[in-house]
Amino acid sequence: LPPHVFGVSADAFVKLVEDQKSQAILISGESGAGKTESTKLVLLYASEVLTSEEGIEDRILDVNPILEAFGNAKTARNNNSSRFGKWIEILVDPIAMRLNGATVTDYLLEVTRVCSQGPHERNYHVFYQLAKHATDFASLQLQAGPEKFAYINKNPVAVAELDDADGFLQLRKAFASLSFSSEDEESVFRIVA
Image 1 (tube, rainbow, N blue to C red):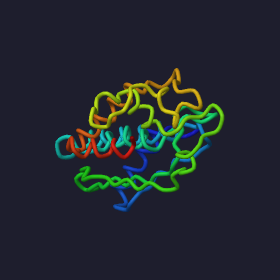
Image 2 (image 1 turned 135 degrees about the vertical axis):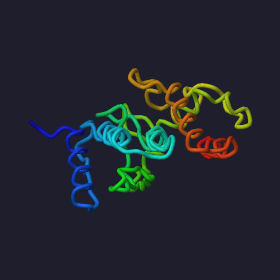
Image 3 (image 1 turned 30 degrees about the vertical axis):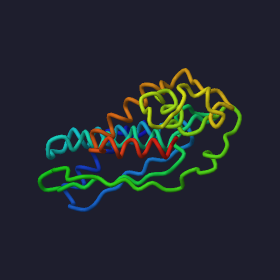
Image 4 (image 1 turned 60 degrees about the vertical axis):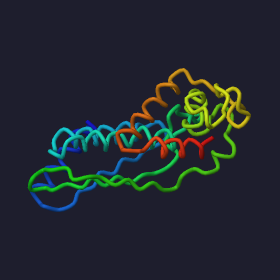
């Protein structure tokens, strides 16, 4: 049987405690292989087995909606394809099995997608999410609905398996969890707009 993501995670934490040495879990694969979902499961496992200050696990998990909104897009092969690589470092006190924080480094963002997409592909999710909720930010002076924007309406705007409205709510919830001020949040959306 191939290794299970929770088994790999458990082995890494056991080695961390026993050997007192840093551990790494490499998640790789072809488009659609489940890298994004596997990463979420590793983070979920870590949040369950480690103690921490109140709410830090939720804040670490809340990074995912932000990464997905700004770094994932529909491709011809996958509706939620990561268009970048990321290195997530979980900071752990191995003696206390305490989660102290995390850092996320992204790299190799597929910048060409911002300018154009192939047939049956979409730009990054955040463009469609913001367009769905354009009226939430009157100061941006946007019309509601992604079909109104020539920049993103060249290919199918709606994808059955993606709920852009819910994705936007999850994105805003993540911003709030990570202590983005309303001014910071609006500044981010102003750049996207």
